[in-house]
Image (cartoon, rainbow, N blue to C red; front, top):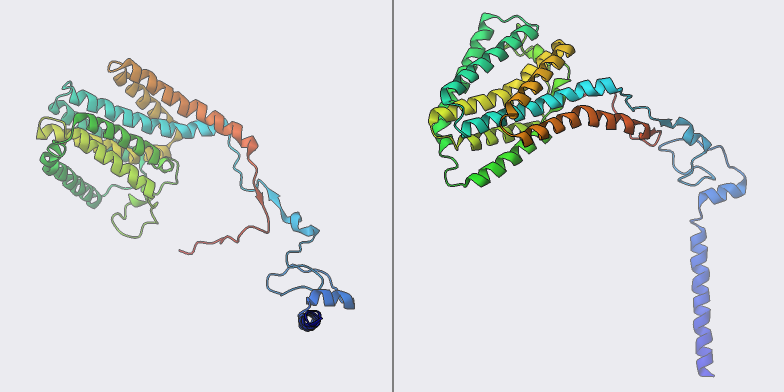
Amino acid sequence: MPCLGFSLRIFRVYVKMGATMAERCSQFEDPRIECTKRGQQVGWKKVVYGGMQCGYADNYMDSSFLEAMVMNANVVKRDTATVMVDSVGIASHVSVVALVATVWTHALNGALPASALLVLDALVLLLGFFALLLTVKCVFSVPFVVQIGRNFTLFVSAIYVLAPVFQTLTRSISSDSIWALTVSLLVVHLFCHDYTFSTSPSTMAASLSKDFPSKKTSKVQETTLSANVSMNASIVASVLIASRLPTHLYVFALMLFSLEFFLLFPLVTHCIRQRSVNLHLGFSCTLIVFTMGLIFPLSRLAFVLFITVIVFITLVCPYWLIRIQEYKFEINGPWDEAKLCFDLD
């Protein structure tokens, strides 16, 4: 009996605590429920900062929410001819890398003497200068030519002074490691190269205007991280190959040849493309055929591999891109984040 009386007293205490908590919780009743009970529910409004609306949940959306949905608003419709023309720029740069690698192979085999390589450097430089002269729409004034000549002289002098350093740079490294690292760097160069430069608006023509070198020119296209990685990879690969040559003059000639193609050749192709698309197509096709002619006597396997890569880039990849366009599905609506319609710069 004493235990039963004690249990009843505990039960009464819990009942009283429950009643007190229920009374306190009723003070914080959801105002939306209270509003519904009073019959004061109004129409829902689409607001960002307005608090809770009477009679509606926080995540409520009416039927007009999907009316602003837009499908495939930013999808660019491409045609096969345009994509194939753009892919020629990629194929031409692959041809440049293959051309430089072929010259490297001939130099390492001793089939191309240093004197012939120097003549080839001068010929490539003159052809590039005349290509710029014919394609860039600007006035080549005397101060402009003087500054270009001074910069080129410093560039060539730096390579010539550093040639002995390049020659002994990898003396303690095995040749197999050099070949593997060079191939890896060339692959990195191809994957990270800025291929949009050949199809972008002509910013280089603005920088080569008659006001050069004043700072009144328009904003030049900014380089990306991948473009810098690509350029550095090509330079390191050139240094690794040049370090296996026997003489300082040979190293200088090969480094100059490599840098002319890796650093200056993209500028030439960009200017040609901005001048005329047909001229760019003819120039790229000529370069591809010329590279094929150099690779064929060197290695039949490399020749077949090069043709396969060019066909894959210019024919298979555009076909794939056009085919997958029909599976492109993009939706936009009021749930997208806001985008600025003006440039903060």
